[in-house]
Length: 292
Ligand code: NDP
Image (cartoon, rainbow, N blue to C red):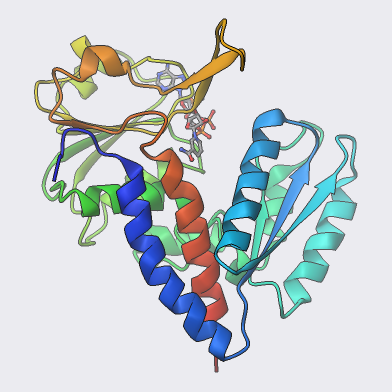
Protein backbone atom coordinates (compact mmCIF):
# COMPACT_ATOMS: atom_id res chain seq x y z
CA UNK A 1 0.00 0.00 0.00
CA UNK A 2 1.35 3.42 -0.98
CA UNK A 3 1.23 5.45 2.21
CA UNK A 4 2.80 8.57 0.76
CA UNK A 5 -0.40 9.73 -0.92
CA UNK A 6 -3.43 9.18 1.28
CA UNK A 7 -6.03 8.93 -1.46
CA UNK A 8 -9.64 8.96 -0.28
CA UNK A 9 -11.19 6.81 -3.02
CA UNK A 10 -10.03 3.33 -1.89
CA UNK A 11 -11.00 4.17 1.70
CA UNK A 12 -14.39 5.33 0.58
CA UNK A 13 -14.92 2.31 -1.74
CA UNK A 14 -14.03 -0.04 1.09
CA UNK A 15 -16.60 1.54 3.43
CA UNK A 16 -19.24 1.66 0.68
CA UNK A 17 -18.86 -2.11 0.15
CA UNK A 18 -19.98 -2.77 3.72
CA UNK A 19 -22.74 -0.15 3.39
CA UNK A 20 -24.21 -1.94 0.36
CA UNK A 21 -24.68 -5.06 2.50
CA UNK A 22 -26.43 -2.98 5.16
CA UNK A 23 -28.67 -1.28 2.58
CA UNK A 24 -29.66 -4.70 1.17
CA UNK A 25 -30.45 -6.09 4.56
CA UNK A 26 -32.54 -2.98 5.45
CA UNK A 27 -34.36 -3.29 2.14
CA UNK A 28 -35.44 -6.85 3.07
CA UNK A 29 -37.17 -5.24 6.06
CA UNK A 30 -38.76 -2.61 3.77
CA UNK A 31 -36.56 0.16 5.14
CA UNK A 32 -34.93 2.52 2.65
CA UNK A 33 -32.51 4.99 4.27
CA UNK A 34 -33.61 8.52 3.47
CA UNK A 35 -31.78 11.82 3.74
CA UNK A 36 -33.55 15.20 3.72
CA UNK A 37 -31.08 17.94 2.79
CA UNK A 38 -31.96 21.58 3.45
CA UNK A 39 -30.35 24.17 1.20
CA UNK A 40 -30.88 27.89 1.78
CA UNK A 41 -29.89 30.47 -0.83
CA UNK A 42 -27.70 30.28 -3.94
CA UNK A 43 -24.18 29.62 -2.64
CA UNK A 44 -22.70 27.80 -5.70
CA UNK A 45 -20.48 25.48 -3.64
CA UNK A 46 -23.40 24.53 -1.34
CA UNK A 47 -25.57 23.76 -4.39
CA UNK A 48 -22.88 21.46 -5.79
CA UNK A 49 -22.39 19.68 -2.42
CA UNK A 50 -26.12 19.09 -1.92
CA UNK A 51 -26.57 17.80 -5.47
CA UNK A 52 -23.63 15.48 -5.10
CA UNK A 53 -25.01 14.11 -1.80
CA UNK A 54 -28.38 13.57 -3.51
CA UNK A 55 -26.77 11.69 -6.42
CA UNK A 56 -24.75 9.43 -4.11
CA UNK A 57 -27.82 8.44 -2.10
CA UNK A 58 -29.81 7.63 -5.25
CA UNK A 59 -26.86 5.66 -6.69
CA UNK A 60 -26.84 3.49 -3.57
CA UNK A 61 -30.60 2.82 -3.77
CA UNK A 62 -31.30 5.11 -0.84
CA UNK A 63 -33.73 8.00 -0.89
CA UNK A 64 -32.87 11.64 -0.86
CA UNK A 65 -34.79 14.87 -1.12
CA UNK A 66 -33.63 18.46 -1.33
CA UNK A 67 -35.63 21.24 0.34
CA UNK A 68 -34.49 24.46 -1.28
CA UNK A 69 -35.30 27.75 0.47
CA UNK A 70 -34.75 31.17 -1.07
CA UNK A 71 -31.95 33.40 0.17
CA UNK A 72 -34.29 35.68 2.15
CA UNK A 73 -36.20 32.84 3.79
CA UNK A 74 -37.63 33.07 7.25
CA UNK A 75 -36.02 31.09 10.10
CA UNK A 76 -39.41 29.90 11.39
CA UNK A 77 -40.29 28.38 8.00
CA UNK A 78 -37.08 26.32 8.05
CA UNK A 79 -37.68 25.24 11.67
CA UNK A 80 -41.28 24.26 10.73
CA UNK A 81 -39.98 22.02 7.95
CA UNK A 82 -37.45 20.47 10.36
CA UNK A 83 -40.21 19.84 12.86
CA UNK A 84 -42.20 17.95 10.17
CA UNK A 85 -39.11 15.98 9.10
CA UNK A 86 -38.37 15.13 12.76
CA UNK A 87 -41.79 13.46 12.96
CA UNK A 88 -41.63 11.76 9.54
CA UNK A 89 -40.82 8.08 10.13
CA UNK A 90 -39.51 7.59 6.57
CA UNK A 91 -36.79 10.29 7.05
CA UNK A 92 -33.70 8.95 8.81
CA UNK A 93 -31.29 11.84 8.34
CA UNK A 94 -31.67 15.63 8.21
CA UNK A 95 -28.80 17.71 6.90
CA UNK A 96 -28.64 21.49 7.01
CA UNK A 97 -26.14 22.62 4.36
CA UNK A 98 -23.84 25.28 5.82
CA UNK A 99 -23.06 28.14 5.63
CA UNK A 100 -26.47 29.80 5.88
CA UNK A 101 -27.25 33.37 4.77
CA UNK A 102 -26.13 35.74 7.53
CA UNK A 103 -29.62 36.81 8.68
CA UNK A 104 -30.35 33.24 9.84
CA UNK A 105 -29.40 31.85 13.24
CA UNK A 106 -27.64 28.58 12.32
CA UNK A 107 -27.41 27.53 15.95
CA UNK A 108 -31.18 27.77 16.51
CA UNK A 109 -31.89 25.87 13.28
CA UNK A 110 -29.31 23.14 13.97
CA UNK A 111 -30.63 22.76 17.53
CA UNK A 112 -34.14 22.11 16.18
CA UNK A 113 -33.03 18.91 14.39
CA UNK A 114 -33.90 15.70 16.26
CA UNK A 115 -30.49 14.49 17.61
CA UNK A 116 -31.41 10.99 16.39
CA UNK A 117 -31.70 12.28 12.81
CA UNK A 118 -28.74 14.69 13.05
CA UNK A 119 -26.53 12.68 10.70
CA UNK A 120 -24.06 15.56 10.41
CA UNK A 121 -23.44 15.26 14.18
CA UNK A 122 -23.68 19.00 14.88
CA UNK A 123 -26.52 19.02 17.43
CA UNK A 124 -25.24 19.99 20.92
CA UNK A 125 -26.35 16.61 22.25
CA UNK A 126 -24.27 14.79 19.64
CA UNK A 127 -21.24 17.05 20.09
CA UNK A 128 -21.62 16.58 23.87
CA UNK A 129 -21.74 12.80 23.52
CA UNK A 130 -18.65 12.95 21.33
CA UNK A 131 -16.84 14.86 24.10
CA UNK A 132 -17.96 12.22 26.62
CA UNK A 133 -16.36 9.54 24.43
CA UNK A 134 -19.76 8.00 23.66
CA UNK A 135 -20.61 9.34 20.18
CA UNK A 136 -24.02 9.00 18.57
CA UNK A 137 -23.30 10.53 15.13
CA UNK A 138 -19.73 11.64 14.41
CA UNK A 139 -19.53 14.74 12.15
CA UNK A 140 -18.88 13.48 8.62
CA UNK A 141 -15.61 15.23 7.67
CA UNK A 142 -13.79 14.47 10.97
CA UNK A 143 -15.13 10.90 10.70
CA UNK A 144 -13.71 10.71 7.17
CA UNK A 145 -10.28 11.84 8.47
CA UNK A 146 -10.34 9.06 11.10
CA UNK A 147 -11.21 6.48 8.46
CA UNK A 148 -8.29 7.63 6.27
CA UNK A 149 -5.91 7.24 9.24
CA UNK A 150 -7.38 3.79 9.96
CA UNK A 151 -7.20 2.53 6.36
CA UNK A 152 -3.61 3.65 5.80
CA UNK A 153 -2.61 2.35 9.27
CA UNK A 154 -1.22 5.69 10.40
CA UNK A 155 -0.48 5.29 14.08
CA UNK A 156 -1.72 8.28 16.07
CA UNK A 157 -1.51 6.69 19.53
CA UNK A 158 0.78 8.75 21.80
CA UNK A 159 1.65 10.98 18.83
CA UNK A 160 1.47 14.76 18.88
CA UNK A 161 -1.35 15.88 16.60
CA UNK A 162 -1.72 19.57 15.76
CA UNK A 163 -5.14 20.58 14.47
CA UNK A 164 -5.29 23.98 12.76
CA UNK A 165 -8.82 25.42 12.78
CA UNK A 166 -11.45 25.24 15.55
CA UNK A 167 -14.79 25.16 13.72
CA UNK A 168 -17.64 23.08 15.16
CA UNK A 169 -17.79 21.32 11.79
CA UNK A 170 -14.19 20.13 11.55
CA UNK A 171 -11.48 21.36 13.92
CA UNK A 172 -13.11 20.95 17.33
CA UNK A 173 -14.63 17.49 16.69
CA UNK A 174 -11.44 16.06 15.17
CA UNK A 175 -9.41 17.39 18.12
CA UNK A 176 -11.93 15.86 20.55
CA UNK A 177 -11.97 12.52 18.70
CA UNK A 178 -8.21 12.09 18.54
CA UNK A 179 -7.83 12.84 22.24
CA UNK A 180 -10.31 10.08 23.20
CA UNK A 181 -9.34 6.58 24.31
CA UNK A 182 -10.48 5.26 20.92
CA UNK A 183 -8.67 2.83 18.63
CA UNK A 184 -7.90 5.79 16.35
CA UNK A 185 -7.14 8.21 19.20
CA UNK A 186 -5.02 8.45 22.34
CA UNK A 187 -3.11 11.29 20.71
CA UNK A 188 -1.78 14.38 22.43
CA UNK A 189 -3.67 17.13 20.66
CA UNK A 190 -2.86 20.82 20.25
CA UNK A 191 -5.67 22.93 18.78
CA UNK A 192 -4.51 26.05 16.91
CA UNK A 193 -6.57 28.89 15.41
CA UNK A 194 -6.30 32.44 14.10
CA UNK A 195 -5.24 33.80 17.50
CA UNK A 196 -2.43 31.26 17.94
CA UNK A 197 0.87 33.12 18.19
CA UNK A 198 3.75 31.61 16.25
CA UNK A 199 1.80 28.76 14.62
CA UNK A 200 5.01 27.25 13.22
CA UNK A 201 6.29 26.61 16.76
CA UNK A 202 3.45 24.08 17.18
CA UNK A 203 3.32 22.64 13.67
CA UNK A 204 7.08 21.95 13.73
CA UNK A 205 6.57 19.75 16.81
CA UNK A 206 3.71 17.78 15.24
CA UNK A 207 3.83 14.14 14.15
CA UNK A 208 0.47 14.64 12.45
CA UNK A 209 -1.02 17.95 11.25
CA UNK A 210 -4.70 18.31 10.38
CA UNK A 211 -5.32 21.59 8.64
CA UNK A 212 -8.85 23.01 8.23
CA UNK A 213 -8.69 26.78 7.87
CA UNK A 214 -9.91 27.69 4.38
CA UNK A 215 -6.72 29.54 3.31
CA UNK A 216 -5.12 28.24 0.09
CA UNK A 217 -1.73 26.56 0.65
CA UNK A 218 -1.19 28.19 4.07
CA UNK A 219 0.74 25.23 5.54
CA UNK A 220 4.23 25.48 4.03
CA UNK A 221 7.06 22.96 4.12
CA UNK A 222 9.16 25.14 6.44
CA UNK A 223 6.38 24.79 9.04
CA UNK A 224 6.55 20.99 9.34
CA UNK A 225 9.14 18.53 10.56
CA UNK A 226 10.51 15.88 8.20
CA UNK A 227 8.29 12.79 7.85
CA UNK A 228 5.24 14.39 9.43
CA UNK A 229 1.77 13.29 8.26
CA UNK A 230 -0.49 15.99 6.79
CA UNK A 231 -4.26 15.65 6.52
CA UNK A 232 -5.53 18.53 4.39
CA UNK A 233 -9.24 19.23 4.86
CA UNK A 234 -9.24 22.54 2.97
CA UNK A 235 -11.22 23.06 -0.22
CA UNK A 236 -10.36 26.42 -1.81
CA UNK A 237 -11.35 27.70 -5.25
CA UNK A 238 -8.54 29.52 -6.99
CA UNK A 239 -9.38 31.44 -10.18
CA UNK A 240 -7.45 30.53 -13.32
CA UNK A 241 -7.62 30.76 -17.14
CA UNK A 242 -9.09 27.27 -17.57
CA UNK A 243 -12.48 26.67 -19.17
CA UNK A 244 -14.00 26.19 -15.71
CA UNK A 245 -12.40 29.44 -14.56
CA UNK A 246 -11.00 27.97 -11.34
CA UNK A 247 -9.29 24.98 -9.77
CA UNK A 248 -9.43 23.52 -6.28
CA UNK A 249 -6.48 23.50 -3.88
CA UNK A 250 -6.15 22.61 -0.21
CA UNK A 251 -4.90 24.45 2.86
CA UNK A 252 -1.53 22.68 2.58
CA UNK A 253 1.10 23.73 0.06
CA UNK A 254 1.18 20.29 -1.54
CA UNK A 255 4.02 20.82 -4.01
CA UNK A 256 6.47 22.01 -1.35
CA UNK A 257 5.34 19.45 1.26
CA UNK A 258 5.30 16.29 -0.86
CA UNK A 259 9.08 15.81 -0.65
CA UNK A 260 9.27 16.41 3.09
CA UNK A 261 6.32 14.59 4.64
CA UNK A 262 5.86 10.84 5.08
CA UNK A 263 2.17 11.01 4.03
CA UNK A 264 -0.24 13.62 2.76
CA UNK A 265 -3.85 13.74 1.53
CA UNK A 266 -4.10 15.31 -1.94
CA UNK A 267 -6.70 17.98 -2.73
CA UNK A 268 -8.87 17.15 -4.54
CA UNK A 269 -9.14 13.40 -3.91
CA UNK A 270 -8.11 13.09 -0.26
CA UNK A 271 -10.55 13.95 2.52
CA UNK A 272 -13.16 15.27 0.04
CA UNK A 273 -14.60 11.89 -1.11
CA UNK A 274 -14.90 10.76 2.51
CA UNK A 275 -17.45 13.31 3.69
CA UNK A 276 -20.37 12.02 1.60
CA UNK A 277 -19.44 8.40 2.35
CA UNK A 278 -19.63 9.07 6.08
CA UNK A 279 -22.95 10.88 5.59
CA UNK A 280 -24.27 7.76 3.89
CA UNK A 281 -22.81 5.68 6.72
CA UNK A 282 -24.52 7.82 9.40
CA UNK A 283 -27.87 7.83 7.60
CA UNK A 284 -27.78 4.04 7.28
CA UNK A 285 -26.86 3.77 10.97
CA UNK A 286 -29.86 5.96 11.77
CA UNK A 287 -32.15 3.76 9.64
CA UNK A 288 -30.81 0.65 11.39
CA UNK A 289 -31.77 2.14 14.76
CA UNK A 290 -35.43 2.13 13.68
CA UNK A 291 -35.43 -1.69 13.69
CA UNK A 292 -37.05 -2.81 16.90
P1 NDP B 1 -14.24 27.89 9.28
O1 NDP B 1 -14.09 29.14 8.50
O2 NDP B 1 -15.51 27.64 10.03
O3 NDP B 1 -13.06 27.79 10.35
C1 NDP B 1 -11.75 28.12 9.98
C2 NDP B 1 -10.85 27.99 11.18
O4 NDP B 1 -9.53 28.33 10.77
C3 NDP B 1 -11.22 28.93 12.33
O5 NDP B 1 -11.15 28.25 13.55
C4 NDP B 1 -10.15 30.02 12.25
O6 NDP B 1 -9.80 30.56 13.51
C5 NDP B 1 -8.97 29.25 11.71
N1 NDP B 1 -8.03 30.13 11.03
C6 NDP B 1 -8.29 31.09 10.11
N2 NDP B 1 -7.16 31.70 9.73
C7 NDP B 1 -6.15 31.11 10.40
C8 NDP B 1 -4.76 31.30 10.45
N3 NDP B 1 -4.15 32.21 9.71
N4 NDP B 1 -4.03 30.51 11.27
C9 NDP B 1 -4.62 29.56 12.03
N5 NDP B 1 -5.96 29.34 12.04
C10 NDP B 1 -6.70 30.10 11.24
O7 NDP B 1 -13.92 26.70 8.27
P2 NDP B 1 -14.34 25.15 8.27
O8 NDP B 1 -13.76 24.45 9.44
O9 NDP B 1 -15.77 24.99 7.99
O10 NDP B 1 -13.57 24.68 6.94
C11 NDP B 1 -12.17 24.75 6.84
C12 NDP B 1 -11.75 24.30 5.46
O11 NDP B 1 -12.18 22.96 5.26
C13 NDP B 1 -12.39 25.09 4.30
O12 NDP B 1 -11.47 25.16 3.24
C14 NDP B 1 -13.58 24.25 3.91
O13 NDP B 1 -13.96 24.45 2.56
C15 NDP B 1 -13.02 22.88 4.11
N6 NDP B 1 -14.03 21.86 4.37
C16 NDP B 1 -13.90 20.69 3.69
C17 NDP B 1 -14.79 19.68 3.87
C18 NDP B 1 -14.58 18.41 3.14
O14 NDP B 1 -15.54 17.69 2.88
N7 NDP B 1 -13.35 18.07 2.79
C19 NDP B 1 -15.95 19.83 4.76
C20 NDP B 1 -15.95 21.05 5.53
C21 NDP B 1 -15.01 22.03 5.31
P3 NDP B 1 -10.84 31.42 14.43
O15 NDP B 1 -11.72 30.41 15.06
O16 NDP B 1 -9.98 32.13 15.38
O17 NDP B 1 -11.58 32.33 13.48
